[in-house]
Length: 247
Image 1 (cartoon, rainbow, N blue to C red):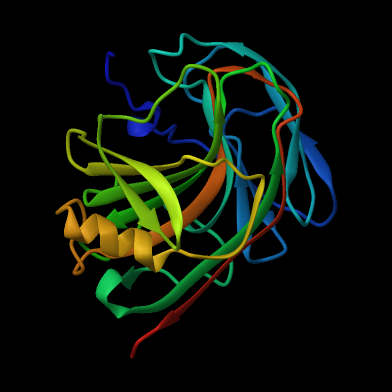
Image 2: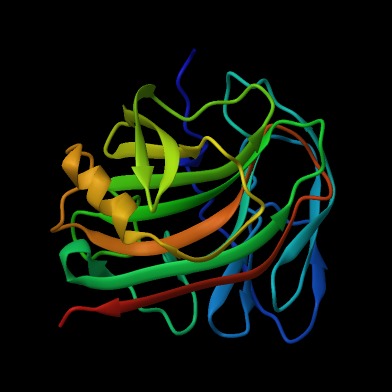
């Protein structure tokens, strides 16, 4: 399989909006604040086709999208919610950056829905930088956790093993981009929600595989959909991220 990663280039001009009530957007670079804690991002970079979404305090729903990207190429979008800083766009009440070694806890909850018959994943995307900088392409590691996926898609890199994390079996994939390492965990028993998912065991596993260094800094935690085909009807609700420091 040819290797791609859609997010290498980020548009310099993003539309950043503070949301007072539910609203809709069709802008490929929309970044919309959710109740001063999280940001929604359309994050459409690899398709000329239109995508629209309705955003509310709890999440979002993609109301229009019919992508047709080849599944051996980059996804059309990673439409998502995040807490932290994505290439300089920071959410409110931002706890990051935090060095991995200084994380006492990192937990997240989310509910999502995926219409059948298309190619997409529902996945966490967690970025680490080798320094505390928040404004540029991260140069440490990208940890992805695929909770569910549909169609003939696979993570970047190669499958290297399986691992049990939090008592759940995952396939483990790794690969190198130009300036950062990607490690992906693919749930072998897909789910549609998690409550208080403990993220630290994923980071510790990545450290054990030399894909992540404990001195590197977490800069944001994201959850959304990498979309190759279709897209309409994908939805997220009740997303949360909570962290504490050791000292």
